[in-house]
Length: 177
Image (cartoon, rainbow, N blue to C red; front, side, top):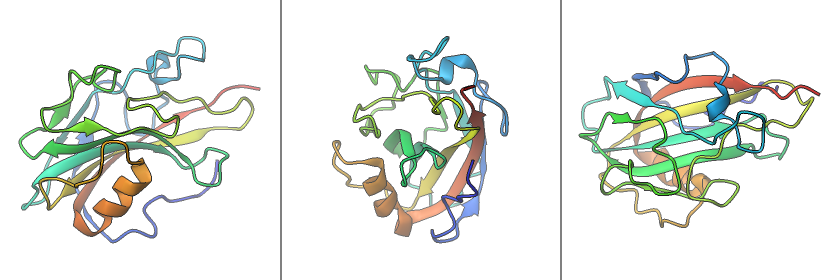
């Protein structure tokens, strides 16, 4: 695991609260949140609830990012853009292929596997523990204007100047050698 801080070069933002019935901050992902390519893995996105976003929040985005992936650029597992400011929860499994539980007006961007859905944790065997930053971004704009086929990195770049706050939950996963 590296010491890479994915927020170190980003503008400061207020913090607010994100919780999950799926995973506790700092805990290991349950098997369902692992890749379906691993035993017990189901590529099921976590349940998320958030509160205390800064005044002026006009929309949210949700991202799941592994900075410890051996790619030189980490690995984006999930990105949801343009969540209305009135929404403060995503149910477990919202990141499936159908997007039927994604709020109206919001959409999933293709992750680093190039599928517009949540893809679970799958650290290489023997690579050590990986961190998964689950982040709710409070934005000062109602829509990012990011195309539906854009990458999560493009979403992040677009959000950088519009982020009022970040609510962060970190999960971990490791695949034994």
